[in-house]
Amino acid sequence: MTLSISTAFDAGNISVTSIDTSSSPWRAELEIVKDHQSDFYQWFHFRVAGAAGQDVELVITNCADSAYPDGWPGYKARMSEDRENWLLADTSYADGRLTIRVQPESNNLWLAYFAPYSMERHHDMVAWAALQPGVTQKELGLTLDGQPLDMLTMGHGDKQVWLYARQHPGETMAEWWMEGTLERLCDPEDSVARLLRQKATFHIVPNMNPDGSRRGHLRTNAVGVNLNREWDVPTMDRSPEVFLVRAEMDRTGVDFAMDVHGDEAIPAVFIAGFEGIPSEREDRMALYHRYRDGLAARSPDFQTEIGYAVSAPGQANLSMSTNQVAERYGAVSMTLEMPFKDNDALPDEDYGWSPARSAQLGKDCLAMLAEIIDDL
Image (tube, rainbow, N blue to C red; front, side, top):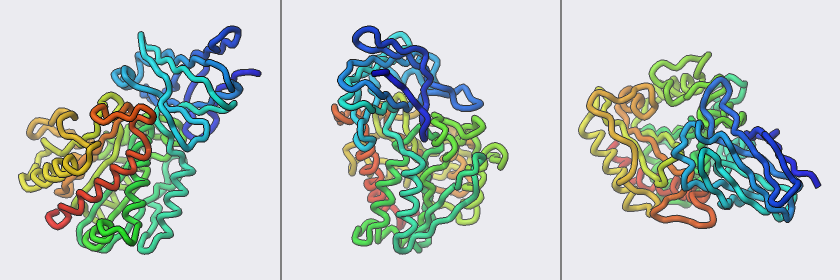
């Protein structure tokens, strides 16, 4: 039997340097491929075939120069034989090399940086949501690769709520979060959803970066652009995804916005706000803090002690969505970050941070939004 490693599928990413099956364990040396027209790389997703019952070592050799080398210590790869359940693999990191040790039970084993969220699953989710009562689907436009940029709208209240995810395509936990959020918002028997849809109109973009998602990128779109540095001056030839979303925001206005992400290095869930924007308002910041602190009280997976440094007054980067949206619309705006590693304060030795926990956090975020919706 021959060991085979392949990536010719949605979001596949790895390059094979060598394969040695002459002794045990079988060993393959691999390299992560850079985002197209970019130096960013960290996302990987590949299939190992023909190794049932064999001990296999998979060594990714170019981790030292990846986008976030601090993301590797303490990290464990995800593996699955059914592409539904993604478990933690035996993983170690030293000297710029990530070693994953597996013994597949079957002849097909998938490995990934985090549980993938395919474009096919995205289309299934959008199609399902669009058929729910009171939900409208709109194609904002096409990406540079010609993929649709989908938005879902629901609710009939005056408050304008924007939720958007996966500006950075390798941060797949963001779309798992979206799946949980949409599931709750579309539940006609859920009192939180009923309240929110009465008081607010939701504009939801489940995947801001379809091209990078399908291409297997970590951080950029089809032409190597980091979308979360385009919000001050987006263009259709460089960042149509941001241009189209921001144009729709201009049309609707924004009272509350959450940009959903994943963090490679920090083993915790946290949010970052809009401190340091030129027009920072005390009442908006108080609402942001109320939301953040309330979510920490509501969800054991969320905390406020670990996170990003706060920008000094007047020094916020307005090319980033959270800052631009807060400045442009006077919104309570924030970036939600989930870990690629685990929530170290509440670890799961089998799954780590997972799709299920991401989805549950989405539901918890909605419950906290219901507590402040009247004050936006």
